[in-house]
Structure formats: C-alpha cells, structure tokens
Length: 525
Ligand SMILES: *Cc1c(COP(=O)(O)O)cnc(C)c1O
Image (cartoon, rainbow, N blue to C red; front, side, top):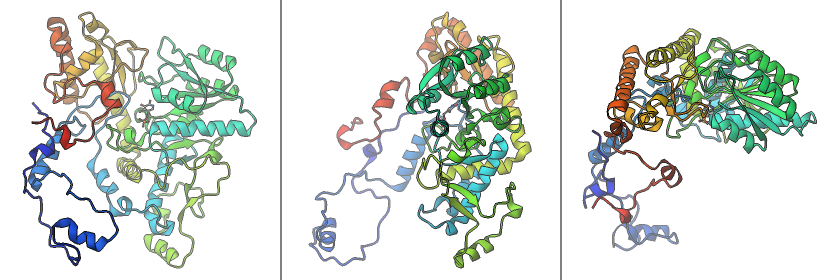
C-alpha cells in the first residue's frame, strides 16, 4: 500500500547539506558577520533580507527519494491501465519526449529571429501539413493551447465571418445534449445563446430537432463531436452538414475524438468548416493534471482568411504537400541567413482578416514536436491501425461487460462506450462508488456521470495501446466489483481502501488547493 509522505520540511536536520558550494569569488567588501554582510556591501542599495530563508536541510539522496516517492503516489498511464473515457489516455512512446527535448526545440528563445529557428519553423510547417492531410482541411493554426481554446478560436472565426457578411445578428449556437461541457462554455463565452438539442433514441443528432432549431433561432453555428461522446459515429453527418449550411450557419467539429477515425474519415470530407484536434489526446503528449497541451484548429475555405496569425509559411510555396525531399538542406538555410536573404520558413503576418494572435510566441512547441514525431514514426498505416485497434478494444470490452453492466446504446461503437451502474444502484452502490473501488485494483477509473444523458454513466475508453491481457484483467475487476455490490455493498461504498488519499472533497480540492507547505502549518509533529 502506498503511504502519504511527510512533507520535506519535516525531514530537515540542521547542518545536512546537498552539496558544498565553493567559496564565493567576489571580494568581501562588507562586514564579516556571515552570508549577508559581504554581499550587502557589494550590492550597496539593494535590499538584503535579515534572516536566511527557512529551507529544509537535506542531502541529495533524501531529496531524490522524497520526490520520486511522491511521484509514485499518482496513477499514471506509465504505471497502469487508464480507461478514462473522452480523454484518450493512450501510452505515449518515450522517443517523442526525447525529440521534444532536443535543444533546438526546448531551448528556443521567443525573440530569436526566424532565420535562426528554421528547424523549429519547418517542424511546425510539416505538422500543419500532416494535420491537414488527416483532417481534410485547408489551413491550420497551431497556436491554441488546448481543445477548449481551439473551440473558442473556431467560434470567434465563425463570428468574424458572419459579421463580415452583414449577418452579425445571428446569436445562437446549437449544441447536442451529449456534448462535452467545453462546447457550451465556449459558445457562451463568445457571447452566444446556447440551444441544447436532444439526441435521438439512437444517441445521435436528430435531423428533425436540428431542422426545428435551425428554423426557430438565428443560428450562427452548430457544434458537434464526431464520433460523439457516446462513442457513436454520426451516421447522418452529410445531411447534417447540408441542412446547417442551407440555413446559413457553419459547423464547428470538435475533433477531440479523432483517434477513432484516423485514416478512415476526414472532417473536411464531411463538409465541416472548422475542427480542432487535441494533440494531447490523439497525438502522443502525456496529459492529465493540467499539463501543457495543444489544440490546433484547422479550417476549410470559408474561414481560412480568419485564422489567428501569424501562420508559419514557406517561401515560394508551390502548394505541394512538401515533405523532407523538397525541403532545402540546413546548409542552404544557414547561407540565406548569413547573406540576410529571405529564409525559407517565416511567420506570415499579412493576413488582414485574421482574428489576431491567440497565444504568445510559438505555442507549446514541445507538444507540437511530439505530435510530428508520433505521426511521422507511425506513418499512415500505423495511424490507421491505431484507430482500428482503439475501436476493436472498445468493442471487445463492451461485448464482455454487457452481461454484467447496463449498456444503453449497445451497438458498434468507435473509440469508447458508455455503460451504466444502474443495475448496481439497486444494491445502493452508485457510479462514483464503483469508480473508487476500481482504484483498489491498481487501475484508473473510467469517466463517470458523463455524458449527462446516461444515468450513472461509466464512460470507458481503453485505447489501442492496451493488450488483451489488460483488457481481460479489467473485465475481471468489473465482474468482481459487481459481485461485491450484491454480496458486500459496503466494501464498494467505502472504497478506495488502498490509495494514499481516499475520498477528498473534490470541490474544495479544486477551489482551495493547498499547493504550498509552510513551516508554520507543520502538521507532522
Ligand atoms: C477533452 C475534450 C475537450 C476539451 O479539450 P481540452 O484540451 O481539455 O480543453 C473538448 N471536447 C471533447 C469531446 C473532449 O473530449
């Protein structure tokens, strides 16, 4: 069992040192009363503190062990199964991290001249080409820092386009009731009214409801997710596209679930106007816990002029898809910089209709590099296989769990499926209890209570990176917990029993997080 660690301050012992610094090489011009005197003399007017800071005194191995143990208290995809639906918590190959850490990427300075960062610009340009190929769109901005940020950018572009054509009175965004919460938040942050559209009995967009909403409101955009959060592919997508465009509105495609359809289907070919892609879900950036991500937005012809700028462009671009073969060698690039000639890759700032910059400097470069490394190393065939395996794994689990758990939309799904704890609820156990009990078996819980249209929802996304042994082990755990619900519900209701923290107050933890330990609140005794 993992134990909570006492704070590092509690391990401090006076006089212990991590390292010995050599004597200072600056003249001791001040008094001789220790560490502050001489520096004070040297620094003159600068305010010096009177007392040394209260830092813990420890040797290096103690510090390393402390933080390594702390890091092991978290569940991670590197330590166990992580079927968190809607999040695509796949395993991320370590080589992609290594490439992102290359100094030409990791040590870029935001104010370096374009001539000096040609490699990074080329990587960004190539990533854009790859994303365009995968989404079937025309141009993309890599700036947005997350999926939700990409959504906001997309909706702001739609608004700019509509105002340009004198249709600024359109004030409504339609969102299906299975949508991710960020869709509704995005539309209302952009100042729109949100109309929630009930799903059909099959868990899809209902064409009748859509037509009704389009005729009753001044609709600016439809925001949809495909495959949707029930893991279902929108079978009427072409008709949805036709109806929406006929009504003078555009379609925002939430591409967070792209993993399921990589190489199979392209939003561009479904008639979508703008799509965001979660690089930190589909394209190999470790995530969870709010780490850096990226949510590039790709657009079709209508919205291209409105993309946030600047865009990375290639000089004398022939319009081809590029690739390593027709990109000049680094020696040429260096030459052109030396002679002050135009460098091959540059920031295109001549975009008069652009909605402007939405993020500082280059965006999250490390995330962009990981995505490019992942796409390039997988290749088209590899990505297609990833999508197929993700779908196979989700359907395998669905088929093996359907005897034990209620599955409201029980038919072929894409990357994930939504089960319900409604049968277990008869014994007084709810989805949250069940999720907590899963933690006792060293696995992460599925997403719960989402989407809202399934009561006691358990949203399960195994991803393609899990083998059959792991999937079978998960099935066994789920079956055992079901037995416990009937035989000993209290065991499940009081779970987890083996984790370092049991049931924290989730609201308080989010609203008033305690991120800093201060000596005065030492509770370790
Ligand atoms: C994760 C997700 C988002 C939001 O992406 P963030 O990067 O977390 O902002 C939006 N829509 C869907 C369907 C998602 O799964």
